Image 1 (cartoon, rainbow, N blue to C red):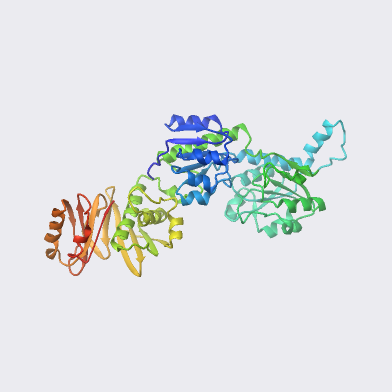
Image 2: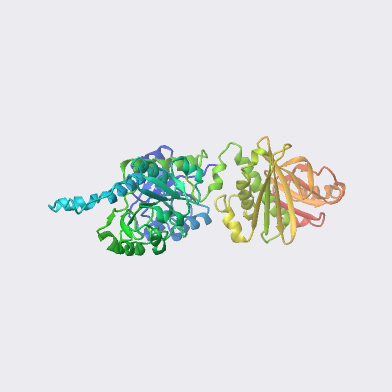
Length: 527
């Protein structure tokens, strides 16, 4: 991937000083402004290429759209529910987090809450401070032999599992992404939620907040649990339905809850916080010195690596870019974009295509269809060089425009190439290209196989005609009259029937209409 220019970054929250230091050491100007209102942030963000936040800053669509130069939004932490990722994606802005920065801190707090629930530690501390000695009141339970259900088996869920296993707990879990054999390798048996709920003495959730996880623990799921089950949420407020949790606590169906997160923070509704069987914290999951240093340093290094074209880590909305950092990938991206532009120009349609089919050929391109198709969309939708969509927003914009994108890969021992087909107004156009000696080249256009590959660089004039002897002198005459030099000429390997030809020219014709009386079709572009 080509380096992304990041010259100025705004840090809108308290982030460890190492973040600013790392960015500045790599030539990036940093401004720190905390506790801005939404209006102040909207006014300020237009001046920056990057924005770094924690969880308090709400990066809404209004903020995203105000960032006319914004290229990267970095979340120094894990959850990005305070960022309008869809709005950022549509603008071609990368959103990244630090997926492992607070893993250990969040896992340790989860374990602390599980232990506190089992032994009523916070309540006993308060009682002692009140001058009481209530040993019988705080009778607890051992964790040994109890069943812990872990909903969400990512980094944090895994760390919680391994730690609580040391207490002799049996760990079971649910995760729609992590393969069962993977979680089994670290001691967690996977099952469906309906199978999990009735078995658990304790439940802890470690999922992102999204429509499918909102209210995951609700009246229905609590009713399926053991009476007196204890629950912990150090992930995101809303995964456990707060009203349902309160009802379960009042009825005794839930025996206690450890909550580090709430739907509203700080919570104005205090019924849960004040409940005697609830242990609550003010969102302390990442609040350790180590996590803050790790998150601050990680987000800074990730931005630097992205800006220098070294690597892309933690991108939540641009997974296709992760495979674009190999030494050869940039030329293939240029090829995909250039082929898209050629097909758009040669179709001579003001309407966008309705279908795009990209096929990669050769073992080396097996994992490249993602960025090749995105690059093709960039070419198809770009009106001018350096002005248009990018790899981040290409596919969402294609869907919005009505373009159906299909990808495929075929093994080939003969060559590495990209085959691209588009449908426009019922007509089909096809191109085949490759990268030779580090240069993107066009091998074939609509059935015309060029004798010599056409380098996709500079100003190009494509036209479709019969035998070249009938029109070549007339076309060169038009070019000469317009003061345009002919720099190269590429002809198809066979000249029978109507074929496509390509000329490399010194500049684009001011009026291509003069050619259209000489040939069947004509198109020009700069790549």
